[in-house]
Image 1 (spheres, one colour):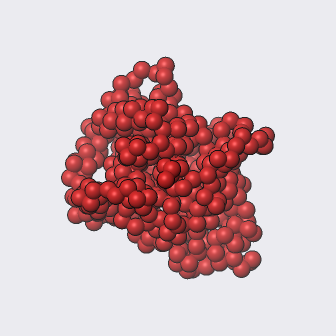
Image 2 (tube, helix red, strand yellow):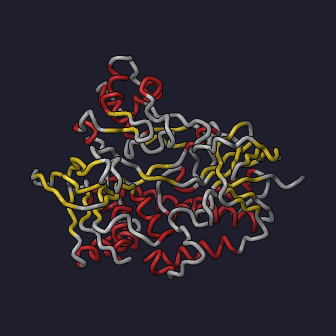
Image 3 (tube, helix red, strand yellow):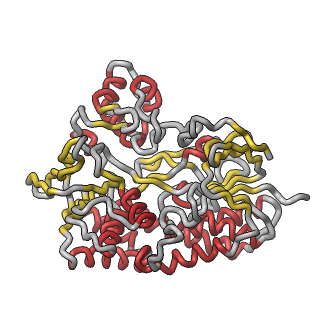
Length: 460
């Protein structure tokens, strides 16, 4: 029997370890990578003419970054690597990709999706002003271009990434003015027992916070963001918020990085027909997988943060595990003890992630106090009022129906950044659970294609 045609989407930690396992089994997978270089977002590589040491670029994660980069580099010649290539659709065992001005259809026998995650954001009055970035974007400017988003930066939101990016800016010589965290100390204590399942990670986080404090970075917990100050022409001029004691405060700054942990990039899994389930702790719809990464669709496997946000270490584990499940399903039995060990590791990662979710909860209640003039969908400039009107006057109790009436989520990002906030707003508008408001369904293309793309170079 000929070797199965296997396509991996993503060359981050999960995709790298999956490819490594498949190559070790004598196969030659195709790896689709949207980035110019492997590593994913967490271990994003700098341009070739940049010479910063991994310790400067990745800090405490330098050794892991080196290991992932080295593992991928050693696969050269044994995989079909397609960098700077967008996977934009999945249908009938075919993955549709685009590179430059050409599209191609790749038939597969097995598809392993390791598409990673993006920022989870909550709109705020003024968040569309120049100088307001997501945390991920703030991190990219530092890693790819060695520059900061501003000279006087405030980081706003919640989650481990909030503190990691602030610390990375500090180490790069651009100490942030403040870190504004919506989570409370009581939340952190609630998550502590579960986070203790990975004490080394817990200690690492404590050191980041301690380092920021020692450097004089102000850390405010339990805050409620009110508005980004400034205007569309001159950009960000400051941030106004209410502190944990109910007192209104303001910090003058010229850039803001904001994010509330991460959301799974699950659009390709959606297009592949995978079943989704609602997670009440995370308040997210996530694709369903078994304990080895098999989705509800035969021959489609899911790994990494594109399934559930468990972090880079878990992504490596899940990538290996999904590849081993794939090999088993194609008649190449894998050592049971090795798969059991990986499953136990995944359980540990899941306990830790549950602790993170409790310690840094998604502050969905903000949607209830958001002014109705606030822009929710940046791409289509749709306000809270327009979305609520679709719910209230057009009888659209579900987010996809509200999208049809309001155009929310119809723009360039296809709801990747406004989708979860939109679901919460639809739920508030009808005084119902967020689960009942549904989720924005994925549609092809999952990301915009150049208008001139028309030439298909092959189908195979």
